[in-house]
Image (cartoon, rainbow, N blue to C red; front, side, top):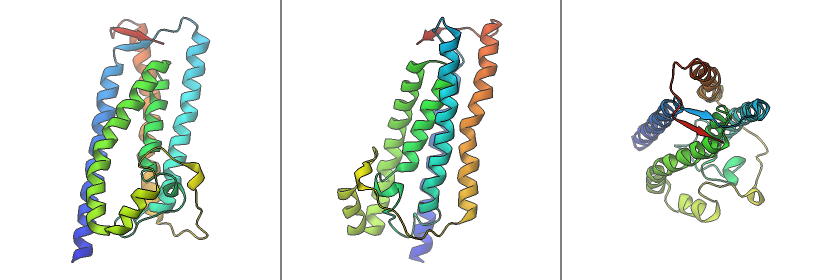
Length: 208
């Protein structure tokens, strides 16, 4: 019964996380409708966009890497290997990097940094709620983990690898599918750029 309640609690937190991410992405995309890159050199704009695609690919691969270690186990044990040996919340780290990549799709470094900061702040609220739950369920095991491993920003010197990994394929596929939302931003923002170029959408702010 306790295990069932634990799974329900974790499912609730994961649902809240998805809602928080969806809201943040939605607000970001709405705001980007009126923002455009201020670079006069189109080549610089294109370079930033291309680099942004690479950042988004890194995000998807990073999130899948995290799932190899945590998939299906978050509510039953404290994982301290792989990316979770360097940061307690590497999935959120990679999602924040993804927000930076989405910002680069606009060709603006200012927008990229702003989106990453917004995403980071939003995740802090989710992390705080999750920490309270994990401390209640795992007690000293999680408290020790908190003492040893940074909350967010990774410390590579702490890295520990697993000899063997047991992976739930369904979790891996779900993480990959969830990550595709970052790629959706590319054609969407290209379309917004086209509408701005045709003066259908107003450009209220230009940023480098």
